[in-house]
Amino acid sequence: MAEYTLRPLREDERPSMEALLAQEGLKRDAGLDYSCGGFDGESLGSCAGNTLRCLAVAKDRQGGGILNRLVLHLIQVQHRRGNYHIFLYTKPRNAPLFADLGFAEIARAGDSMVFLENRKTGFSDYLARLREETGALASRPGRTGALVMNANPFTLGHQYLAQEAGKACGLLHLFVVSEDVSLFPARVRTELVRAGTAHLKNAVLHQTGSYLISRATFPAYFLPDSDAVCEAQARLDGAVFSRIADALGIQVRYLGEEPASAVTRIYNRHLAQALPAAGIQCRILPRKTTPAGE
Image 1: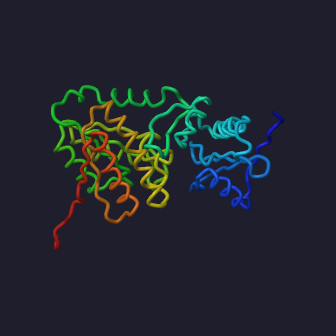
Image 2: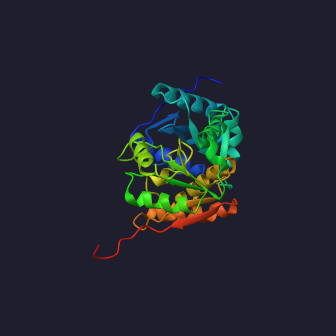
Image 3: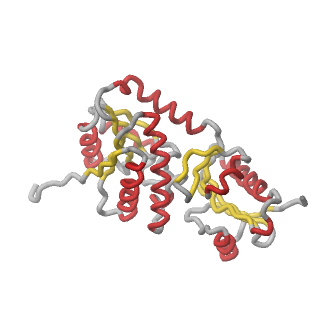
């Protein structure tokens, strides 16, 4: 086909961008940091961090290799940024198209979305690293649990949650969110959690990487969005976690009650439904309270 020129989209082209996405049953994602398109609103694609988002080609232009060119262009943009591990999620019907472009499926949330990465062994390598970090603790008797926390920053409340989960388990996998969009950098949060849980001899600390509660899997956690989006993202996060749980023998995941956060309440509610369906117990731990007058 003739040369297909892609160019960055201007802000005043946002209406045509949203119209094309609507044709594909999509909405413009929050947090996009680069968008490009070709011709007059016939194709578009975007980046957000190390993810590809909002990919669409007009129906009368599909099948001509435009999607390939669009994805390859966005990958080049990511490489110029120094991002070589790239993620995207798409509708199940489109997953084979991205498989042909070198993307491997990590997990899917029913018939709503599929989560992929551009490394064939990326997720399996991550699971292998988790098992290596666990080491000899994997043989501890009793149930195996998990707790995922952002810890921004790590507080006595977070410590209480870890202690309560640890009491109920022979082994506790403690995951710290790696996404660096919080007030405290991931490195600082991880060290605070490490210091605050050093007395828990049955706990092992892990990084979530881009696989749990990140902009790749759950943007609504950081950017308030509709209940429907939050539900779909929580289902996807649950699907990813189910694969992690299978690799590590995790039987129960603990969630911290968050009465002040509407997004986290929605997330907890949907995760509490998704995990049991995958054979994983879900326990929401109430916040620590201090009696009045103390």
